[in-house]
Image: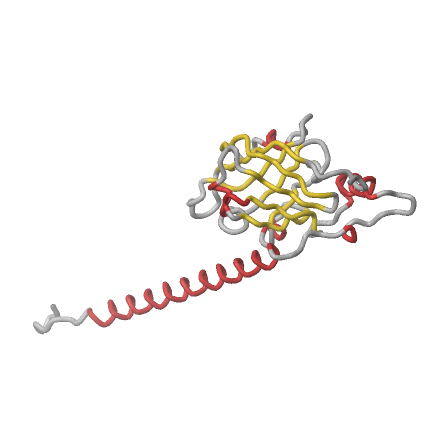
Length: 216
C-alpha cells in the first residue's frame, strides 16, 4: 500500500516476467526440437548408406585385400572413413560404422574405436555410439540376440553373450582378446540428462564368418 492509501499494482511486472519466461521456454523447446530433427536426419542418412565396396580400401602395388585391411586396421584409416555396417535385427538397429570415436564422428554415425581389431580380424572389435541417436536401440539387446557386421571383407555374425555397466575408466573392455568378439559401447543411464556417468557394454562372440573368397 502506498503512503496515500492507494494499492500498488504489482501484476504488470509479474506478467512481464512470466511472458518472458514463457517465450524463453518456447524458444528453447524449438531449438531442442530442431537439433533432434537434424541429428535424426543425419543419423538416418548415414544408416542408409550401402555397405562399403573394396574401393574404400587403398591397395598398394602387389598387396592383396587382406593385407590392405590389416594395414588399415593398424591405424592408416583417417577418422570419418567408411568402415562397415552394423545390424541387429531383433531391435531394428541399422548403423553405419565409420573410423574414429571423436564427438564429430559419433554425431554422424557409430564409430570404430581406434586401436581395436578391424572387422573380420581375430580379436576385439570395438564400436561406440550415442545412446540417444545411433545406439538408441542398444538398450534393448539381450543375450542370444544376433549382430551382423558387414565390411569390405564380408559379413560376420555375432551373438550377444552379455550386457553390463562399467565406469568410463574401465577401458579393459576393449583389451585384445584371443577369440573374435564384438564390443559395443554407449553411455549409461540411457535416460540421464547431461553427460552420463557410466558406460553400457554389449559383448558378443563371433559365430559365423563369410566363405573364403573364391570358394563355392
